[in-house]
Structure formats: structure tokens, C-alpha cells
Image (tube, rainbow, N blue to C red; front, side, top):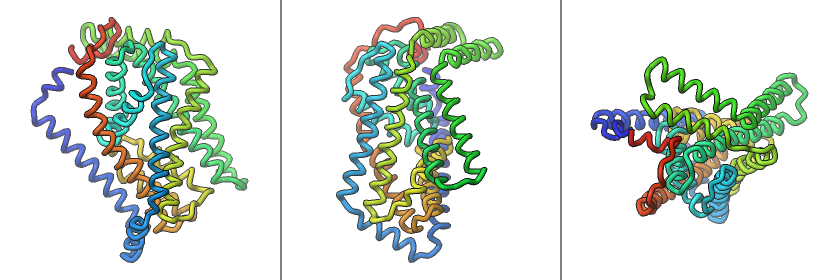
Amino acid sequence: MAGELAAPGAGRRRGWQAAVVRYVIGAAVGLLAVGLLLPKRSDLAAAWHQLGTADPGWVVIAIGAESLSLLTFAWLQQRVLRLSGARMSLPGLFALSLANDAIANTVPGEPAVSSAYRYRYYRRRGASGASAGWTIFTILIAQAIGMSLVLLLGVVVALAGSTSAAGAGVTVLGLLIVAAAGAVLIRRDLVLRLAGAMVRLVRKVTGHPRGSIGDRIDATLARMREIPLSGRATAGTVAVATAVWGLDFLCLLCGFRAVHAAIPWHGVLLAYGVAQVAGSFPLVPGGLGVVEGSLAVVLAFYGAGRVQAVSAAIAFRMVNFWLAIAVGWVTVALIAQHLRRIRPPDHDPGDLCTLERS
């Protein structure tokens, strides 16, 4: 990694250019969706006016809901770290959640970049390499299961009263996805064994990663397999991960109230789930434009007024995205300043942090 950090300026410029292109694409997608929903200039003016008359009380509640979502994510990290034998304070992990959210919303390469940031933070706070890697792996799967449950519930609510075969098929498919994700979390040892085998295969074919780097990766994966996770702990982890999404969804509902818009209850949860899934594709960091556009389109499809759908979606993203970025990057700077005063822990043979010095 040291070689990457010392890359020529041209390489960094290409990286920034690619990031700018992605943001432009995302913004274009959002503008296209808004243009399709609000083809008249008077509609755009109405949406802007509705945003300008937002209820400050509901805006504060929306901020509170998003803050609770990030606090719950901090609690999720604390729980999973404790299961692996590491202990960290909730305030510190809350600050990490704020910083992680800003990185995830702005830096291309998700979820690898924010996961690497959390890994380094865990290591600097005393967690072993295996514990840090296992925590990130477990949380990623738990979040996927939580979003699958939210999306499945949204489908069930949207199809309530429908007897069509298509509706039943979508519900069954959603159940299968949730079951498969749960099986991955329960039998994570098999997934980790597969990851270790792939590392060894790639190393044999390509010669990379070279030397002791590959040995450290393999050692860390082996140690991660040894960390237990009971059925009760699995259920609790998934429940907390689902609550993180639920509180973020509450922020969306507050966005509706803030702009004085009626909530299309039969479709709003599905719209939220679809927007989150669409925004998770590595097209634009944070799903900029993609989330707003897909959210507004699905909300309008399920009966929300076009102006109200756009206003509510933008109000939600002003808290969920833009405010999170502003607060998060300040937190990144504060964490960096704090960690400079902490002596890094001694490296164990399976520590992936030593890759940075290789």
C-alpha cells in the first residue's frame, strides 16, 4: 500500500476525474427523474416552494431519527466487537459511525473504503486483526439481511390484498433471499474458508499477494473462523442491524411531514427499500441522484403527488446525505487528531494492518 500512497500525481488526478464523472452521472440521473416527474416549470417552482416552507420541528425530528440510526449502528459495532472479545466505548464508536457515513457517501470504492477505515480504527483501539475483520464481515452480512427484511416487508405491504401469482412469487423470492443471507451469517466459517481458498488460488496463479502478505491474510481468515457466534447472538445482531435501517426510514417519514406531504403508506417502505438498493450499486458514492430519483419515482407510482414525492425525497436526503457528510467529515478530522496521540498496538502475525507497511 505504501507504493499506492506514493503514486504519481497523474494517477491521483485520474482518480478524482473518475469520481467527478460518477457524481455528474448520479446528479444527471436525479435531474432526469425530477424532469420526468415535474415536466412543467410551475411544478418545479411548487416543489421548491414546498421545500422552503418545511416545518422546522419535523426537520429537527428527522435529524434526531438519523442520529439515532447512527447511534444504533455504533451499538451494533459494540455488540459484535464484544462477541469477538474486543471492547470499545459507545461514544467513540458513534463518532466512528459519523465518520464512516461521510466516507461511504463521498469516496468511490464502497464498501471497501469505509470498511478499511473502520478496520484501522478498530486496530488502533486495541482489537486484533481477526476481531476487526470478523466484526466488519459480520456487520456487512447482518446489514444485508436487515435490508432484505425491510424490502420484503415493503413488498408484502405493497401487495396487501393482492392475490396475483406475481405478487406471491416476489414474496417467496424475498423470503429465499433472506434465508440465504441468514445461512451465510450462520455458516460464515464456510464463506471464510472459501475466501481463504480463493486467496491461495490467486496467489498460486498470479504470484500476488507476495511473500508474507498472503500468509497474513490467510492467518487472519483462519482466526476469524475460530470466533463463535451463537444462534441467539445472530438473531440479536440481525435485529439491531434492521433497527438501523428502520430509524433511517423514520427519517424519510419525518421528511414527508416536514414538507407537509401525505405519506403513501402502502408504498413508502417499498420505495425506501428500492432506493437504498439502487443507491448501493457502485455507480455513484452515496447513491447521489440515484436514491433521490428512484425514491421519487416509486413514491409517485404509489400515489404520492409528484411535487410532494420530489420534495419529500429531497428533504430526506438533505438530512440523510448532505448533513451527514458535513458532520461526518468534521468527525473524520477529529478522529484523525485523536488517533495520532494513540500508540498503535503491537502487530500479530495475522494482522492485515501490516499490509500498509509492505
